[in-house]
Each structure stands twice: as structure tokens, then as C-alpha cells.
Image (cartoon, rainbow, N blue to C red; front, top):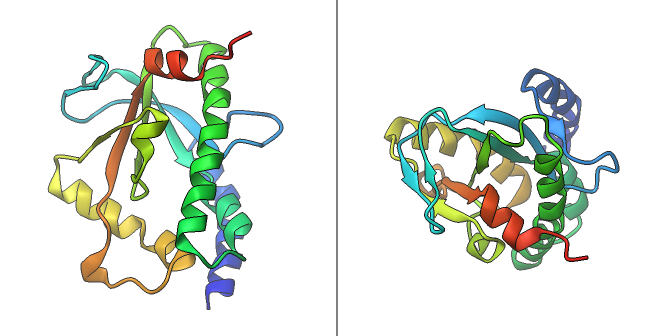
Length: 183
């Protein structure tokens, strides 16, 4: 069943990619991120470095390239090992994300990065701030929307015990301080 679902997802993913206006951040496709610019619509947030994120601030919304990750992790049984590999791939993608932002035509307007995920363990070490979405309907929607990913990547999970989703934020300045190449 999972194999069938994965095959369908492989067909649907390019369509989703097109209609969601996502972009790749590197031509070599080494990154696990696909991104798009967005205007923030949530509540005012103050990040750990003091950056204020307000309604209509321009952010780069990051999406993990789930189908790519699932393919690469398919043969790995250990959830811990999968987590380590995802962490490493995200870490390796962060400088590419910084390059993407620095070279973007709207670079000056971009205030930071936002993502939403259930994979928020250890992301602080990558520089992210973890924020729980305030809106209960949005939290519920995101929980449900992550069910297919959970189905493909983990052991059976009870619908009652779905992990919560969290926003991940990092300011552009913190991203630069943390991931700027030192020549």
C-alpha cells in the first residue's frame, strides 16, 4: 500500500510543485529545500535574536522536498538514523538557502525564513526558533495535512496522537551570521 501511495505521490509532486509556485534553491538539486516568497499572515513574533516578524513581512517559506527525502530514507529502518540524516541534509542546505536569499532580486525585503513542520527536534541547533501556531484551526489543519508524510515515513500513528506542528523561524541576519561562508 505504501509503495502504491508513494508512486502516486511521485506523479502528483511535480504538479504540486508547479501550482504551489515553489522554486529550487540550487541548480544541482543538492538542497532538501524548495521555497517561495510569502507575506507573513500570522501573529507578531519576536525571535531570539530580537527580530520582529509582523503581518505582511516578506519571508522565504521553506518546504522540505519530502518525496526526495522519502526515497533516500526508504531503506533505513531506524527512526533515529532517519532523523540524523534529515538533520544533516538540512544543515548542508542552509548555506544554499543563504545564497538563494542573497542573490534574490527581493533580497533587501526578505526579513527571514519560515517553515512549518512536525520535525522540530533539534532545530534550535540549526539556528531556528520554534513557535507554536496560535490559531487552533490552523494547527488542526496542519496536523491533518501531515498525515500522508507520517504514513510514508513512520510506523503506524494513531490519529489521536499525531505530533503537533510548529513554525520554524530564522531571521536573515542570524542565517547570515551562522551560515555565511568564511573565505
